[in-house]
Every structure is written in structure tokens, then in C-alpha cells.
Length: 183
Image 1: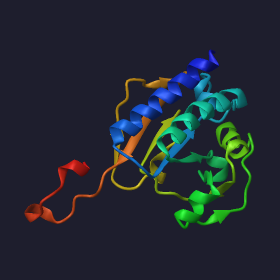
Image 2: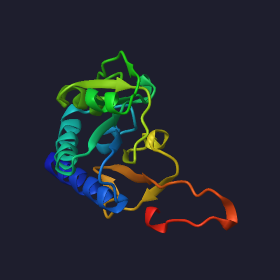
Image 3: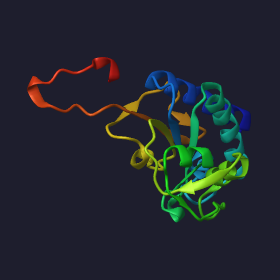
Image 4: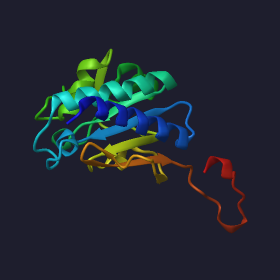
């Protein structure tokens, strides 16, 4: 598997998601099964090398756009999220005491923990958009209403990807008027 190709795919997908989501600030949630990326069943073959390349691709774009990074852990940590302490404080998120590891959190969240400046783990976040790599079910961490975003790349490695963004809820019924620029 060409790890540099994985990095390029990650960069391309994230940049496309940001542009299609029309966000200028906020956070990005990324859930990633490195097992799925290398063609194995989710949770069976975590791979630190793959996680590092994906992180490298994502962090370049996150920094370029001035966004926040959020990485969803695997089910062993109840889908908790690794973020910078600054993000947790800014969003008033409750920090929990756990350190992701390859067998409890997964390779991707472990790499994020090891590479962010001041990482912490929070149980919940409400992101503006995100990338689900390999069926990690990130929708629980995106603000309602979650809508899919189709990107030109549908896979990273062997893993299917689903990108999503949020849009404001329509409220008020038949007499209400809406700002369709927000949709």
C-alpha cells in the first residue's frame, strides 16, 4: 500500500469537504478505521503507519484553514474524541481521563494524541462537518441536521468514506421564511 497516496487522498477529501461545507471556522471530526483502510475488518488490524500518514495529510489542511481537529476514538473508548485542550476549553467540553492506545482508542486517535500540542479527550463534541473512514459512525458528533457531502474520492485505501456536514434546522412551519444560503 502506497502510504503517500493515502496522505494525498486524505488531504484532497478534507479540502473538498471544507469547500463544499462552506465552513470558515469550527471543528472537523474524523473517525478512522486503519484496519478498513488496509482492507481488513474494522477493529481487527490497527496500523500506526497508516494512521500517521492520514494524520499528516489532515493536519496540513486543518492548519491551512485555521480549523480545529477532532479525532473519534474506537468503540473501546465509547467513541470519545481527541482534541486540543484549547478546543475543549473554548467549547466548554468536559475532559475525561483516558489516553488512547492502539488497542483502546485505535491507531488514528493514538497518533492524534501523540502529535497534537496539548491533547485531551472529551466524551462529546458537536462538529460542523466530518469524515467517516471505514464505518466509524461519526454522525453522533455532528450538529443536527447532518447531511451527506459527496466528494470525488469515495475511498481512502480500501475504506469507504462518508463525508458529512451540518445545516441549520428548518423550524416554523409553512409560514416561515428561510435563508437558503445557510443550506
